[in-house]
Length: 482
Ligand code: UD1
Ligand code: CA
Image (cartoon, rainbow, N blue to C red; front, side):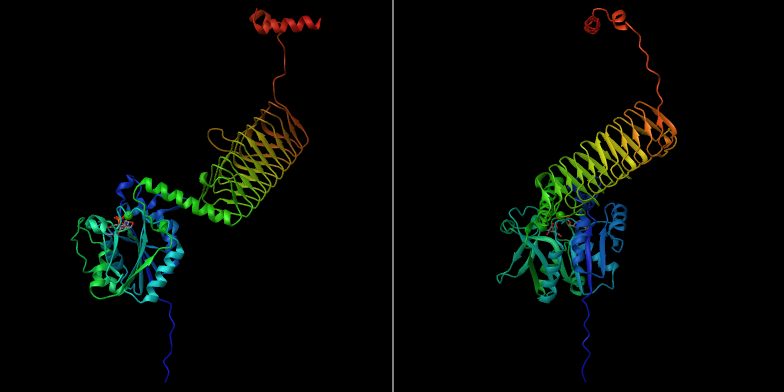
Protein backbone atom coordinates (compact mmCIF):
# COMPACT_ATOMS: atom_id res chain seq x y z
CA UNK A 1 0.00 0.00 0.00
CA UNK A 2 1.24 3.41 -0.97
CA UNK A 3 1.09 6.37 1.35
CA UNK A 4 -0.55 9.46 -0.02
CA UNK A 5 2.00 12.17 -0.55
CA UNK A 6 0.44 15.26 0.88
CA UNK A 7 2.10 18.38 -0.40
CA UNK A 8 1.46 21.22 1.91
CA UNK A 9 2.71 24.78 1.72
CA UNK A 10 4.90 25.44 4.76
CA UNK A 11 3.08 27.38 7.47
CA UNK A 12 4.80 30.61 8.32
CA UNK A 13 4.32 33.38 10.81
CA UNK A 14 5.83 36.86 10.58
CA UNK A 15 6.63 38.84 13.72
CA UNK A 16 7.54 42.53 13.32
CA UNK A 17 9.06 44.22 16.37
CA UNK A 18 7.70 47.73 16.74
CA UNK A 19 7.24 48.33 20.46
CA UNK A 20 10.33 50.42 21.10
CA UNK A 21 10.24 54.17 21.56
CA UNK A 22 13.32 54.90 19.52
CA UNK A 23 14.68 57.33 22.14
CA UNK A 24 17.40 58.71 19.90
CA UNK A 25 14.82 60.00 17.40
CA UNK A 26 13.85 62.50 20.15
CA UNK A 27 10.32 62.56 18.79
CA UNK A 28 6.73 62.48 20.00
CA UNK A 29 6.10 60.14 17.08
CA UNK A 30 7.13 56.51 17.65
CA UNK A 31 10.19 55.68 15.57
CA UNK A 32 8.46 53.10 13.37
CA UNK A 33 5.87 55.69 12.30
CA UNK A 34 8.39 58.10 10.85
CA UNK A 35 7.83 58.47 7.10
CA UNK A 36 10.32 57.56 4.41
CA UNK A 37 9.36 58.23 0.77
CA UNK A 38 5.77 57.07 0.88
CA UNK A 39 5.63 54.61 3.73
CA UNK A 40 6.42 54.63 7.40
CA UNK A 41 9.43 52.64 8.56
CA UNK A 42 7.15 49.81 9.71
CA UNK A 43 5.20 50.10 6.45
CA UNK A 44 8.38 49.39 4.49
CA UNK A 45 9.21 46.42 6.72
CA UNK A 46 5.70 44.98 6.30
CA UNK A 47 5.97 45.41 2.52
CA UNK A 48 9.25 43.45 2.51
CA UNK A 49 7.84 40.85 4.91
CA UNK A 50 5.02 40.11 2.47
CA UNK A 51 7.55 38.00 0.52
CA UNK A 52 7.50 35.48 3.40
CA UNK A 53 3.90 34.67 2.39
CA UNK A 54 2.96 34.10 6.01
CA UNK A 55 -0.48 33.02 7.13
CA UNK A 56 -0.24 35.29 10.16
CA UNK A 57 1.54 38.60 10.66
CA UNK A 58 1.99 39.76 14.23
CA UNK A 59 3.22 43.25 15.05
CA UNK A 60 4.52 43.81 18.57
CA UNK A 61 3.43 47.26 19.73
CA UNK A 62 4.17 49.01 23.01
CA UNK A 63 5.33 52.60 23.02
CA UNK A 64 2.30 54.67 21.91
CA UNK A 65 0.59 51.41 21.01
CA UNK A 66 -2.74 53.05 20.04
CA UNK A 67 -1.00 55.22 17.47
CA UNK A 68 0.92 52.34 15.93
CA UNK A 69 -2.18 50.11 15.96
CA UNK A 70 -4.28 52.78 14.25
CA UNK A 71 -1.63 53.04 11.56
CA UNK A 72 -1.62 49.26 11.06
CA UNK A 73 -5.39 49.27 10.59
CA UNK A 74 -4.84 51.76 7.78
CA UNK A 75 -1.96 50.09 5.96
CA UNK A 76 -2.22 46.38 6.78
CA UNK A 77 -5.60 45.53 8.35
CA UNK A 78 -4.83 41.79 8.45
CA UNK A 79 -1.78 42.31 10.69
CA UNK A 80 -2.45 41.44 14.32
CA UNK A 81 -1.09 43.88 16.90
CA UNK A 82 0.25 42.27 20.07
CA UNK A 83 0.82 44.49 23.08
CA UNK A 84 4.17 44.41 24.85
CA UNK A 85 3.24 46.77 27.66
CA UNK A 86 6.78 47.06 29.00
CA UNK A 87 9.71 46.69 26.68
CA UNK A 88 12.14 44.21 28.16
CA UNK A 89 14.02 43.48 24.98
CA UNK A 90 13.68 41.91 21.54
CA UNK A 91 13.55 38.36 22.97
CA UNK A 92 10.81 39.37 25.39
CA UNK A 93 8.90 40.95 22.48
CA UNK A 94 8.98 37.77 20.38
CA UNK A 95 8.07 35.63 23.41
CA UNK A 96 4.95 37.75 24.00
CA UNK A 97 4.03 37.61 20.32
CA UNK A 98 4.24 33.82 20.20
CA UNK A 99 2.27 33.49 23.44
CA UNK A 100 -0.51 35.45 21.76
CA UNK A 101 -0.39 33.14 18.74
CA UNK A 102 -0.24 29.70 20.30
CA UNK A 103 -1.18 28.02 17.01
CA UNK A 104 1.81 29.52 15.16
CA UNK A 105 4.10 26.74 13.95
CA UNK A 106 6.42 26.15 11.04
CA UNK A 107 8.81 28.95 10.17
CA UNK A 108 8.71 32.13 12.23
CA UNK A 109 10.21 35.14 10.44
CA UNK A 110 11.17 37.97 12.80
CA UNK A 111 11.97 41.48 11.58
CA UNK A 112 13.00 44.59 13.45
CA UNK A 113 10.55 47.37 12.66
CA UNK A 114 13.35 49.79 11.79
CA UNK A 115 15.06 48.25 8.72
CA UNK A 116 13.12 50.00 5.94
CA UNK A 117 15.52 49.38 3.04
CA UNK A 118 15.03 45.62 3.23
CA UNK A 119 13.86 44.21 -0.13
CA UNK A 120 11.10 41.63 -0.45
CA UNK A 121 13.46 39.44 -2.50
CA UNK A 122 15.94 39.36 0.38
CA UNK A 123 13.27 38.18 2.82
CA UNK A 124 12.21 35.53 0.28
CA UNK A 125 15.81 34.34 -0.15
CA UNK A 126 16.40 34.25 3.62
CA UNK A 127 13.28 32.11 4.17
CA UNK A 128 14.17 29.78 1.28
CA UNK A 129 17.76 29.31 2.52
CA UNK A 130 16.46 28.64 6.03
CA UNK A 131 13.86 26.09 5.01
CA UNK A 132 16.04 24.34 2.45
CA UNK A 133 18.94 24.18 4.94
CA UNK A 134 16.67 22.53 7.51
CA UNK A 135 18.34 24.57 10.25
CA UNK A 136 16.98 25.74 13.60
CA UNK A 137 17.53 29.44 12.93
CA UNK A 138 18.98 31.71 10.24
CA UNK A 139 20.10 35.30 10.63
CA UNK A 140 20.48 37.90 7.88
CA UNK A 141 23.94 39.44 8.10
CA UNK A 142 25.96 42.04 6.27
CA UNK A 143 29.54 43.16 6.22
CA UNK A 144 29.56 46.90 6.89
CA UNK A 145 32.25 49.57 6.98
CA UNK A 146 31.07 50.93 10.33
CA UNK A 147 29.45 48.39 12.63
CA UNK A 148 28.98 50.86 15.52
CA UNK A 149 25.99 50.05 17.70
CA UNK A 150 25.13 46.77 15.99
CA UNK A 151 25.26 43.15 17.13
CA UNK A 152 28.38 41.35 15.86
CA UNK A 153 28.35 37.92 14.21
CA UNK A 154 30.81 35.68 16.02
CA UNK A 155 31.76 32.67 13.92
CA UNK A 156 33.30 29.46 15.27
CA UNK A 157 36.42 27.69 14.07
CA UNK A 158 34.38 25.93 11.35
CA UNK A 159 33.12 29.25 10.04
CA UNK A 160 29.60 28.60 11.28
CA UNK A 161 27.68 30.95 13.56
CA UNK A 162 28.75 30.64 17.16
CA UNK A 163 26.76 33.46 18.70
CA UNK A 164 25.61 37.04 18.23
CA UNK A 165 27.02 39.53 20.69
CA UNK A 166 25.70 43.02 21.27
CA UNK A 167 28.27 45.79 21.02
CA UNK A 168 27.86 46.84 24.65
CA UNK A 169 28.53 43.26 25.80
CA UNK A 170 31.35 42.62 23.32
CA UNK A 171 35.05 42.23 23.98
CA UNK A 172 37.45 44.54 22.14
CA UNK A 173 38.24 41.70 19.73
CA UNK A 174 34.53 41.13 18.98
CA UNK A 175 33.96 44.84 18.46
CA UNK A 176 36.52 44.76 15.66
CA UNK A 177 34.27 42.36 13.71
CA UNK A 178 32.49 44.06 10.82
CA UNK A 179 29.93 41.36 10.11
CA UNK A 180 26.70 42.44 11.79
CA UNK A 181 23.22 41.24 12.61
CA UNK A 182 20.61 42.96 10.41
CA UNK A 183 17.74 42.23 12.80
CA UNK A 184 15.96 39.94 10.32
CA UNK A 185 15.68 36.23 11.10
CA UNK A 186 13.96 32.95 10.28
CA UNK A 187 13.41 30.36 13.01
CA UNK A 188 11.98 26.93 13.46
CA UNK A 189 8.91 27.91 15.50
CA UNK A 190 9.02 25.09 18.05
CA UNK A 191 12.74 25.49 18.76
CA UNK A 192 12.35 29.26 18.98
CA UNK A 193 9.61 28.92 21.62
CA UNK A 194 11.80 26.57 23.62
CA UNK A 195 14.85 28.82 23.42
CA UNK A 196 12.89 31.96 24.31
CA UNK A 197 11.77 30.35 27.56
CA UNK A 198 15.43 29.97 28.51
CA UNK A 199 16.63 33.52 27.81
CA UNK A 200 18.39 35.34 30.63
CA UNK A 201 18.69 39.03 31.26
CA UNK A 202 22.34 38.70 32.14
CA UNK A 203 23.64 41.50 29.91
CA UNK A 204 24.52 45.17 30.02
CA UNK A 205 20.91 46.31 29.46
CA UNK A 206 19.22 43.67 31.65
CA UNK A 207 16.99 42.72 28.74
CA UNK A 208 15.94 39.49 27.05
CA UNK A 209 17.90 39.50 23.81
CA UNK A 210 16.44 37.67 20.83
CA UNK A 211 19.99 37.39 19.56
CA UNK A 212 20.89 35.08 22.46
CA UNK A 213 18.61 32.44 20.91
CA UNK A 214 21.37 31.76 18.36
CA UNK A 215 24.05 30.99 20.95
CA UNK A 216 21.56 28.88 22.93
CA UNK A 217 20.50 26.80 19.94
CA UNK A 218 24.11 26.37 18.77
CA UNK A 219 25.24 25.24 22.22
CA UNK A 220 22.45 22.66 22.25
CA UNK A 221 23.88 21.23 19.03
CA UNK A 222 21.31 22.66 16.63
CA UNK A 223 22.44 23.90 13.27
CA UNK A 224 22.10 27.66 12.83
CA UNK A 225 22.59 29.40 9.54
CA UNK A 226 23.85 32.74 8.27
CA UNK A 227 22.40 34.39 5.18
CA UNK A 228 24.53 37.17 3.76
CA UNK A 229 22.63 40.12 2.30
CA UNK A 230 23.70 40.89 -1.26
CA UNK A 231 23.38 44.62 -0.63
CA UNK A 232 24.52 45.70 2.84
CA UNK A 233 22.45 48.92 2.55
CA UNK A 234 19.33 46.80 2.93
CA UNK A 235 20.23 45.96 6.48
CA UNK A 236 20.71 49.52 7.70
CA UNK A 237 18.67 50.35 10.76
CA UNK A 238 17.41 53.76 11.74
CA UNK A 239 18.19 55.06 15.19
CA UNK A 240 18.25 58.84 14.84
CA UNK A 241 17.19 61.49 12.34
CA UNK A 242 20.62 61.71 10.74
CA UNK A 243 20.39 57.99 9.94
CA UNK A 244 16.83 58.52 8.70
CA UNK A 245 18.11 61.18 6.29
CA UNK A 246 20.84 58.86 4.95
CA UNK A 247 18.27 56.08 4.48
CA UNK A 248 16.03 58.51 2.63
CA UNK A 249 18.86 59.43 0.24
CA UNK A 250 19.71 55.77 -0.38
CA UNK A 251 16.06 54.93 -1.08
CA UNK A 252 15.73 57.98 -3.34
CA UNK A 253 18.65 56.72 -5.44
CA UNK A 254 17.23 53.22 -5.55
CA UNK A 255 13.79 54.44 -6.66
CA UNK A 256 15.17 56.90 -9.22
CA UNK A 257 17.53 54.34 -10.74
CA UNK A 258 14.67 51.86 -11.15
CA UNK A 259 12.52 54.49 -12.93
CA UNK A 260 15.33 55.60 -15.20
CA UNK A 261 15.93 51.95 -16.16
CA UNK A 262 12.18 51.76 -16.90
CA UNK A 263 12.43 54.61 -19.40
CA UNK A 264 11.71 57.70 -17.33
CA UNK A 265 14.01 60.74 -17.71
CA UNK A 266 15.12 62.16 -14.38
CA UNK A 267 17.26 65.18 -15.12
CA UNK A 268 18.73 65.63 -11.66
CA UNK A 269 18.29 62.46 -9.60
CA UNK A 270 19.90 63.96 -6.50
CA UNK A 271 17.12 66.56 -6.13
CA UNK A 272 14.22 64.38 -7.27
CA UNK A 273 12.26 62.61 -4.52
CA UNK A 274 9.76 60.00 -5.64
CA UNK A 275 7.66 58.05 -3.14
CA UNK A 276 7.69 54.28 -3.56
CA UNK A 277 3.91 54.52 -4.13
CA UNK A 278 4.19 56.72 -7.24
CA UNK A 279 3.84 55.37 -10.80
CA UNK A 280 5.50 56.80 -13.92
CA UNK A 281 5.20 55.88 -17.59
CA UNK A 282 8.11 55.64 -20.02
CA UNK A 283 9.23 58.95 -21.54
CA UNK A 284 7.86 60.98 -18.67
CA UNK A 285 10.46 63.66 -17.86
CA UNK A 286 11.04 64.81 -14.30
CA UNK A 287 13.08 67.98 -13.95
CA UNK A 288 15.15 68.99 -10.98
CA UNK A 289 14.00 69.77 -7.47
CA UNK A 290 10.73 67.88 -7.75
CA UNK A 291 8.82 65.79 -5.20
CA UNK A 292 6.26 63.20 -6.32
CA UNK A 293 4.27 62.09 -3.32
CA UNK A 294 1.63 59.50 -2.39
CA UNK A 295 -0.67 58.22 -5.14
CA UNK A 296 0.81 60.49 -7.81
CA UNK A 297 0.97 59.11 -11.36
CA UNK A 298 2.69 60.68 -14.37
CA UNK A 299 1.84 59.63 -17.92
CA UNK A 300 3.99 59.06 -20.99
CA UNK A 301 5.76 62.12 -22.36
CA UNK A 302 4.52 64.42 -19.60
CA UNK A 303 7.03 66.96 -18.25
CA UNK A 304 6.99 67.70 -14.53
CA UNK A 305 9.23 70.28 -12.87
CA UNK A 306 11.52 71.94 -12.18
CA UNK A 307 10.60 72.96 -8.64
CA UNK A 308 7.32 71.06 -8.43
CA UNK A 309 5.57 69.14 -5.66
CA UNK A 310 2.73 66.81 -6.60
CA UNK A 311 0.73 65.05 -3.89
CA UNK A 312 -1.83 62.38 -4.90
CA UNK A 313 -1.99 64.01 -8.34
CA UNK A 314 -2.36 62.43 -11.77
CA UNK A 315 -0.63 63.97 -14.77
CA UNK A 316 -1.80 62.48 -18.05
CA UNK A 317 0.26 61.90 -21.16
CA UNK A 318 1.87 64.94 -22.73
CA UNK A 319 0.90 67.40 -20.00
CA UNK A 320 3.42 70.01 -18.82
CA UNK A 321 3.59 71.05 -15.17
CA UNK A 322 6.14 73.72 -14.26
CA UNK A 323 6.98 75.11 -10.80
CA UNK A 324 3.69 73.96 -9.34
CA UNK A 325 2.30 72.74 -6.03
CA UNK A 326 -0.62 70.34 -6.52
CA UNK A 327 -2.62 68.23 -4.09
CA UNK A 328 -5.33 65.80 -5.16
CA UNK A 329 -5.51 67.20 -8.70
CA UNK A 330 -6.15 65.50 -12.03
CA UNK A 331 -4.22 67.06 -14.89
CA UNK A 332 -5.55 65.86 -18.24
CA UNK A 333 -3.65 64.96 -21.39
CA UNK A 334 -1.62 67.80 -22.92
CA UNK A 335 -2.85 70.24 -20.27
CA UNK A 336 -0.38 72.90 -19.15
CA UNK A 337 0.09 74.12 -15.61
CA UNK A 338 2.36 76.80 -14.15
CA UNK A 339 4.68 78.35 -13.56
CA UNK A 340 3.72 79.19 -9.97
CA UNK A 341 0.32 77.48 -9.86
CA UNK A 342 -1.39 76.01 -6.79
CA UNK A 343 -3.83 73.21 -7.56
CA UNK A 344 -5.87 72.04 -4.60
CA UNK A 345 -8.08 68.96 -4.14
CA UNK A 346 -10.87 68.48 -6.66
CA UNK A 347 -9.07 70.26 -9.48
CA UNK A 348 -9.73 68.46 -12.77
CA UNK A 349 -8.24 69.71 -16.01
CA UNK A 350 -9.49 68.21 -19.26
CA UNK A 351 -7.38 67.76 -22.36
CA UNK A 352 -5.36 70.84 -23.33
CA UNK A 353 -6.76 72.95 -20.48
CA UNK A 354 -4.39 75.62 -19.13
CA UNK A 355 -3.78 76.95 -15.64
CA UNK A 356 -1.15 79.67 -15.77
CA UNK A 357 1.02 81.74 -13.46
CA UNK A 358 -0.16 82.62 -9.97
CA UNK A 359 -3.46 80.80 -10.30
CA UNK A 360 -5.03 78.86 -7.41
CA UNK A 361 -7.75 76.29 -8.05
CA UNK A 362 -9.91 74.16 -5.75
CA UNK A 363 -12.88 71.89 -6.64
CA UNK A 364 -12.56 73.32 -10.10
CA UNK A 365 -13.19 71.54 -13.36
CA UNK A 366 -11.85 73.00 -16.59
CA UNK A 367 -13.28 71.66 -19.84
CA UNK A 368 -11.22 70.81 -22.88
CA UNK A 369 -9.02 73.72 -23.93
CA UNK A 370 -10.40 76.03 -21.20
CA UNK A 371 -7.86 78.60 -19.99
CA UNK A 372 -7.18 80.45 -16.76
CA UNK A 373 -3.87 81.98 -17.79
CA UNK A 374 -2.99 84.51 -15.07
CA UNK A 375 -3.41 85.58 -11.43
CA UNK A 376 -6.78 84.06 -10.57
CA UNK A 377 -8.60 82.14 -7.84
CA UNK A 378 -10.98 79.48 -9.12
CA UNK A 379 -12.89 77.78 -6.29
CA UNK A 380 -15.96 75.52 -6.58
CA UNK A 381 -16.35 76.08 -10.29
CA UNK A 382 -16.99 74.41 -13.57
CA UNK A 383 -15.56 76.09 -16.65
CA UNK A 384 -16.81 74.92 -20.03
CA UNK A 385 -14.62 73.86 -22.93
CA UNK A 386 -12.71 76.62 -24.78
CA UNK A 387 -13.69 79.33 -22.29
CA UNK A 388 -11.14 81.96 -21.35
CA UNK A 389 -10.94 83.48 -17.89
CA UNK A 390 -9.12 86.84 -17.90
CA UNK A 391 -6.22 87.83 -15.68
CA UNK A 392 -7.11 88.55 -12.09
CA UNK A 393 -10.54 86.89 -12.10
CA UNK A 394 -11.77 85.77 -8.70
CA UNK A 395 -14.44 83.14 -8.22
CA UNK A 396 -15.82 84.43 -4.88
CA UNK A 397 -17.10 81.10 -3.56
CA UNK A 398 -17.42 81.86 0.15
CA UNK A 399 -19.80 84.32 1.77
CA UNK A 400 -18.50 83.74 5.28
CA UNK A 401 -21.11 81.05 5.97
CA UNK A 402 -21.17 78.68 3.05
CA UNK A 403 -19.43 77.79 -0.19
CA UNK A 404 -21.33 78.10 -3.47
CA UNK A 405 -20.59 77.03 -7.02
CA UNK A 406 -20.13 78.96 -10.23
CA UNK A 407 -20.52 77.59 -13.72
CA UNK A 408 -19.11 79.11 -16.88
CA UNK A 409 -20.54 77.71 -20.11
CA UNK A 410 -18.74 76.63 -23.23
CA UNK A 411 -16.64 79.22 -25.12
CA UNK A 412 -17.49 82.04 -22.71
CA UNK A 413 -15.06 84.94 -22.21
CA UNK A 414 -14.55 86.56 -18.83
CA UNK A 415 -12.64 89.86 -18.90
CA UNK A 416 -9.78 90.71 -16.59
CA UNK A 417 -10.20 91.73 -12.96
CA UNK A 418 -13.68 90.29 -12.66
CA UNK A 419 -15.33 88.97 -9.52
CA UNK A 420 -17.86 86.19 -10.07
CA UNK A 421 -19.89 86.09 -6.85
CA UNK A 422 -21.16 82.54 -6.34
CA UNK A 423 -23.68 81.14 -6.95
CA UNK A 424 -23.26 82.51 -10.47
CA UNK A 425 -23.79 81.22 -13.95
CA UNK A 426 -22.14 82.58 -17.09
CA UNK A 427 -23.98 81.18 -20.10
CA UNK A 428 -22.36 79.55 -23.11
CA UNK A 429 -20.79 82.12 -25.44
CA UNK A 430 -21.43 84.97 -22.96
CA UNK A 431 -18.89 87.75 -22.38
CA UNK A 432 -18.17 89.56 -19.12
CA UNK A 433 -16.65 93.04 -19.32
CA UNK A 434 -13.32 93.58 -17.55
CA UNK A 435 -13.60 94.86 -14.02
CA UNK A 436 -17.16 93.63 -13.50
CA UNK A 437 -18.64 92.24 -10.32
CA UNK A 438 -21.13 89.60 -11.46
CA UNK A 439 -23.87 88.24 -9.22
CA UNK A 440 -26.49 85.81 -10.47
CA UNK A 441 -26.28 84.98 -14.12
CA UNK A 442 -25.26 86.29 -17.53
CA UNK A 443 -27.45 84.75 -20.28
CA UNK A 444 -25.94 82.80 -23.17
CA UNK A 445 -24.49 85.14 -25.79
CA UNK A 446 -24.97 88.31 -23.67
CA UNK A 447 -22.34 90.78 -22.42
CA UNK A 448 -22.46 91.17 -18.65
CA UNK A 449 -21.07 94.48 -17.50
CA UNK A 450 -21.25 96.03 -14.05
CA UNK A 451 -18.99 98.99 -13.42
CA UNK A 452 -19.31 102.71 -12.80
CA UNK A 453 -19.25 104.88 -15.95
CA UNK A 454 -15.90 106.58 -16.47
CA UNK A 455 -15.66 110.37 -15.91
CA UNK A 456 -12.72 112.84 -16.00
CA UNK A 457 -11.91 115.69 -13.61
CA UNK A 458 -10.11 118.01 -16.04
CA UNK A 459 -7.00 119.93 -14.84
CA UNK A 460 -6.79 117.96 -11.57
CA UNK A 461 -2.98 117.46 -11.70
CA UNK A 462 -2.27 121.14 -12.32
CA UNK A 463 -4.44 122.14 -9.33
CA UNK A 464 -3.47 119.40 -6.85
CA UNK A 465 0.16 118.60 -7.87
CA UNK A 466 1.45 121.85 -9.29
CA UNK A 467 5.07 121.77 -10.39
CA UNK A 468 5.34 118.01 -10.12
CA UNK A 469 6.86 115.82 -12.82
CA UNK A 470 3.32 114.70 -13.63
CA UNK A 471 2.16 118.31 -13.98
CA UNK A 472 5.09 119.11 -16.27
CA UNK A 473 4.49 116.00 -18.41
CA UNK A 474 0.82 116.89 -18.74
CA UNK A 475 1.65 120.49 -19.67
CA UNK A 476 4.13 119.35 -22.36
CA UNK A 477 1.52 117.00 -23.79
CA UNK A 478 -1.13 119.71 -23.78
CA UNK A 479 1.24 122.22 -25.44
CA UNK A 480 2.11 119.65 -28.12
CA UNK A 481 -1.54 119.07 -28.84
CA UNK A 482 -2.12 122.71 -29.71
C1 UD1 B 1 19.07 44.95 17.51
C2 UD1 B 1 19.87 43.66 17.70
C3 UD1 B 1 21.25 43.86 17.11
C4 UD1 B 1 21.15 44.22 15.64
C5 UD1 B 1 20.26 45.45 15.45
C6 UD1 B 1 19.98 45.66 13.99
C7 UD1 B 1 19.01 42.69 19.78
C8 UD1 B 1 19.29 42.42 21.20
N1 UD1 B 1 19.96 43.37 19.11
O1 UD1 B 1 19.73 45.96 18.26
O2 UD1 B 1 22.01 42.65 17.25
O3 UD1 B 1 22.43 44.44 15.08
O4 UD1 B 1 18.99 45.27 16.11
O5 UD1 B 1 19.38 46.90 13.74
O6 UD1 B 1 17.99 42.28 19.29
N2 UD1 B 1 11.72 46.25 20.23
C9 UD1 B 1 10.52 45.82 20.75
N3 UD1 B 1 10.47 45.53 22.08
C10 UD1 B 1 11.54 45.64 22.89
C11 UD1 B 1 12.75 46.08 22.35
C12 UD1 B 1 12.83 46.38 21.01
O7 UD1 B 1 9.53 45.69 20.05
O8 UD1 B 1 11.38 45.35 24.10
C13 UD1 B 1 11.78 46.58 18.80
C14 UD1 B 1 12.17 48.01 18.49
O9 UD1 B 1 11.00 48.81 18.37
C15 UD1 B 1 12.90 47.89 17.16
C16 UD1 B 1 13.49 46.48 17.21
O10 UD1 B 1 12.79 45.78 18.23
O11 UD1 B 1 12.04 47.99 16.05
C17 UD1 B 1 14.98 46.48 17.52
O12 UD1 B 1 15.17 47.12 18.77
P1 UD1 B 1 16.38 48.12 19.01
O13 UD1 B 1 16.32 48.59 20.39
O14 UD1 B 1 16.45 49.11 17.93
O15 UD1 B 1 17.58 47.08 18.88
P2 UD1 B 1 19.10 47.44 18.58
O16 UD1 B 1 19.76 47.91 19.81
O17 UD1 B 1 19.18 48.28 17.37
CA1 CA C 1 17.84 49.45 16.12
